[in-house]
Every structure is written in structure tokens, then in C-alpha cells.
Length: 166
Image 1 (cartoon, one colour):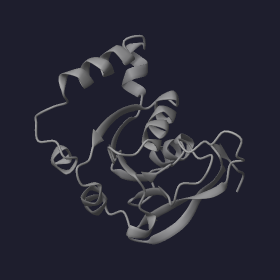
Image 2 (tube, helix red, strand yellow):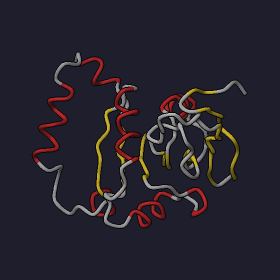
Image 3 (cartoon, one colour):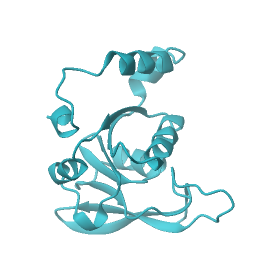
Image 4 (cartoon, one colour):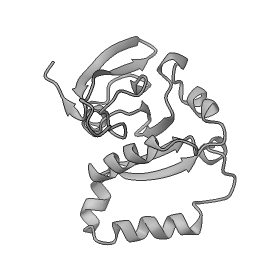
């Protein structure tokens, strides 16, 4: 279902993506690969900031697969992302939706704690959040929102990619 939602109907990843992924992981020990969290990113193919966020995830130890979504709104609806929390990319990890420029430490905490929720979101595109760095501009402070059937709450607060004490 994921590949259909992401605008791909072919079985598996295109060969070039598989080769690039294998080459990127070749230097890692097998134990590190087994422990690296796998995240599937659905993105708008016309958006450049998604690449910066994906690079942040990979630099933080995630194994990210990327799908250019033909209809990103359909992916968001399928994963239960509220319209007012929507951003340009939606990821899936460990049964959770990750919406927008959520920093890696918040995602790692989510999969460690396993709260009852649909996922995390960073509404909008805060300056300085992973993938939204602007040279010479001070990073914004912003909330990472935990959302789900029980409602919403601030899960963590960041300034740029640095978590602030709560």
C-alpha cells in the first residue's frame, strides 16, 4: 500500500536507489545497520527542504528510504495527519507518522517511549529546524506536537535542532 500511496506501483525500489542505499551502508558494521532505525519518507518531489531534513536523519543514524509522492495529501490522510499540522513531507517509522521538520532526537524519543499516538508534527517550516537552516538567520523556537486520538500536546521544544529543557 505504501508504494501505491507514494505514487509507485512497481515492486521494490528502483535498482539505482537500491544500489545507492547499499553503497551508503557498506561501511557500517552489520550490528549498526541492524540497530539503525528505518524511516520511510514520503515527500513532495518539488520541495528542496525535504532533502535537508533527510540528510539530518541520515546524519543522526537513521536509514531513510525516500518516495516521491504523486499525491502527498493522500499519504497524510492515510496516516491520520491533521490538515492544520500538514507540511511538505510525511514519514513513517515504527507505526508512527512524522510530519514536517521534526528533529531526530524527538523521533528517537518517540520510538523509545512508544506513547499512544498517531505521531509527531512540526507545523509550518520554522527557520533553523532540520532542513530549514538559513545562513545568517537565527533559529526559531518551535514545538514538536504529539497528536492522536487522545488529542494533542507539546512533546518537546526546540531552537533550531537543539532541544530545550522543558
